[in-house]
Length: 155
Image (tube, rainbow, N blue to C red; front, top):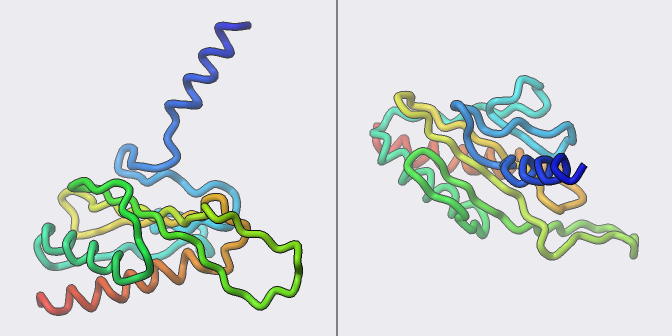
């Protein structure tokens, strides 16, 4: 009994929620506040970024686009992978006094620059937030637009 509990705890600790495994970002969980370029469900899919510039230039442009869209905090930055947190700031006209959004609610956004390809896979998921209201998709679309604009300068 104790041994199975220890094994169970260890397997939970070692299972990452973020990152790349065998060329794939972590799949979106069943809830609706996740969007990914690797999802098959059209309501949760967004097109990956593509580029024609050199890989290092594309990575540089991606970092500029990430920072141009809100207050980004880069959590992890590697040659093939970038993970960013955006604090959730929902300003709605909600009259309910029961509405609550935790102060530490963030959107986690990941980018995977596939080696040997001119593709950047991306995924965004709300963490601790209560409502998405399309913010994940809207943010990735803004990053895409900023990235594409920067890439056009190199053509």
